[in-house]
Length: 315
Image 1 (cartoon, rainbow, N blue to C red):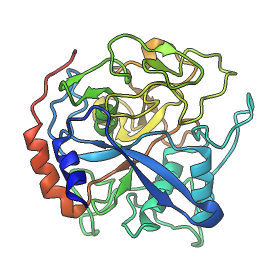
Image 2: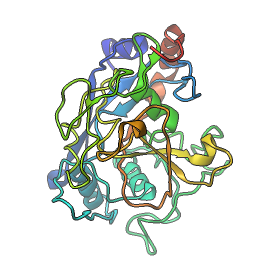
Image 3: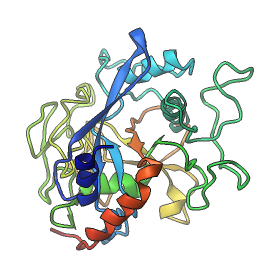
Image 4: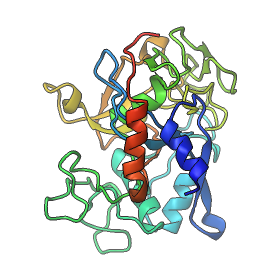
């Protein structure tokens, strides 16, 4: 990594991070994903105890599209489901909503294994094996598995790509690295975003629409967060890696989705709202996050120390 890029990650103070583009697949099934750097390792949590992350990482600038999803499915023989709700005609650049959390974990595993990294999530069968089922649930890694981490037994520590936890997702949406404060909305404001069907105007989000109005294309889905991500409010609910019982101990073991969708009211897209959802449910989208390269971990941690002191909500 060039020194100017590394220093950029170390500082972690730019509110609009540079975009890092990574390529996957080949030939007709090639696609790219844009990421933005999420620095400020060691930031404090918001008043709801969410958003503290002790390391630097990258977050997908956009939601994963139908185009990315279908190309990965073909390239990796994943047999991922693709269906349409039927109230509109889907476009390749709309965010995919056809899959379950387990389907999306298969997508993420393909990103890893096709790039020479360990799979993030543990499944008993793999593509092209007898008995393979893309709906199979992943399980925790065991202490004897290479890459096992007691801090997160469901994510292999040697994987590069993963589905973000609620804290990783929350920080990239609501935290302002320049001021060290959190906002109510993923547009860098405590004022509700202007509801739109599409567009990239600052301070807008795709919500409050009729349910027959299609979701916006992933690059045309509202204003950006302080870090530079799009549509972490509205367009589609997005899966996190976190189980509901991890944030609400008395709840059932459902997954957590965040951010609301195109036909929700403003109360649903606020930072304090979380939604539990059955992990086998088809109907929500997701974005991909990236771990720092192993060779950069110590330096990234040092950079986090320099900018770790933040303030609590609200700005």
